[in-house]
Length: 201
Image (cartoon, rainbow, N blue to C red; front, side):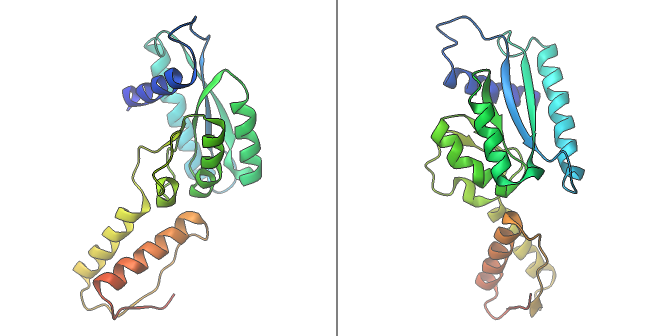
């Protein structure tokens, strides 16, 4: 995992700075977006702690090409407009070469066009929404994890495998981008596999 992150950062560094032709920068700056306050910090802070651990390990091995990695953390709990402003602020500082953004699907969707506009390599580290890369045109937005489509199609297949006679289903999901996507995909998969099934909620 550490080597994979180092590789991603190295690609971003080469892609966005004239490192090969000039002196190395003093550091590789990362903007890392996660929840550090509010209820979502329950899973946002473990992400921050993992990032700290990995950055420490990368730096202990000499950084990337001899350049240490530094991180600036942005709290996603401030909402889309605040996060966009922080992204623009960090991207405007030449020391920040890569953004690791974000945990929330809604944040990823808000930041993706900004990343393309500013031409800043941005790695989504947890957001699952399939909409993020659906148009296939992203040049600066990447995501190493999966997305909602295979996850929730698999849930539909599993449900019908375990309960083939099921007639009605109620869906309880979070009321934000990820939950909305998940409900639509799960419903579509169920209807495709068992057209007479009723979704009651």
